[in-house]
Image (cartoon, rainbow, N blue to C red; front, side, top):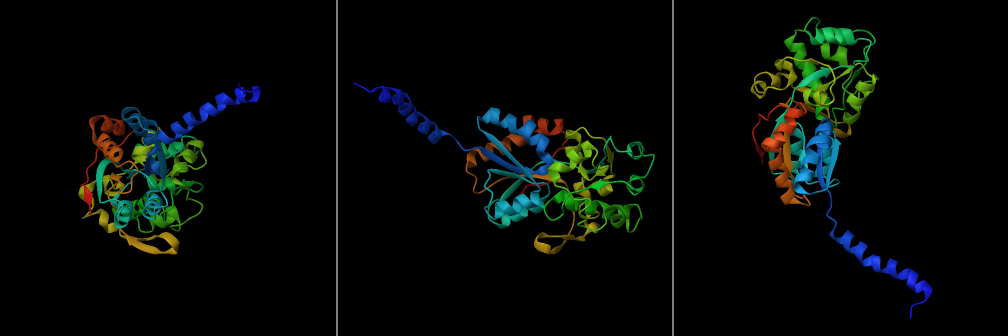
Length: 309
């Protein structure tokens, strides 16, 4: 016969194997590391849609794509899929032997989003309508401009390229230095996930931006011509390449770089915990359903080639 203490403990002891069994069969989350500007799309569109379809626990990791690529290459971050913008971050992963192929899934263009709360909002709206040169508004005293770190984030480099191309296109030498100051200007640099949030809150007046992310956040913006927005792959070799400039690299280094068209690539990582799900995810990104989600969040169709080793 059980004592009273044994009788009370029996249900707890019986539950232990059940809980352990559940823990043993619980699948790890399906992890996607993506360029930080994709947060709205990945966490409110693509991620939940794939999780429901494939019955996986989706986990998104958004950060500057160069920073993510270095973590993945060093095996300090393990994910199933990596989605950077431009080919540069993929090349770091490929060189580490962790991503032999990258498939284009969407594209975007550079633009200048502005805060509707800015005291310069009327001038920005006039520039967006083509009634004022956009760079003249940005040069007004007191305008607070935001961008990301060119050492860790492609967008941080891309605004440098855009402004260099603007100098050539508008015949305005020195424009980049006047607008941005030094490449690592601490008054302007913020993390990519926080940049548009600061803009929405009115903490800055305008910023660099990808049209896709700006559309996703429903922010007003100034469109830029194809000659400087890095969105036309046909201009890469003959025109965009003229913006070859020194940009800050990691650990205090400086590298000379050229702009790359703003294409988003999906990489099934060689050390993916769930390689089969990674392949299914990439097929979903390129499917009509996946492409509709990209379009709904303001992304353009992919236009670049498949990248391989």
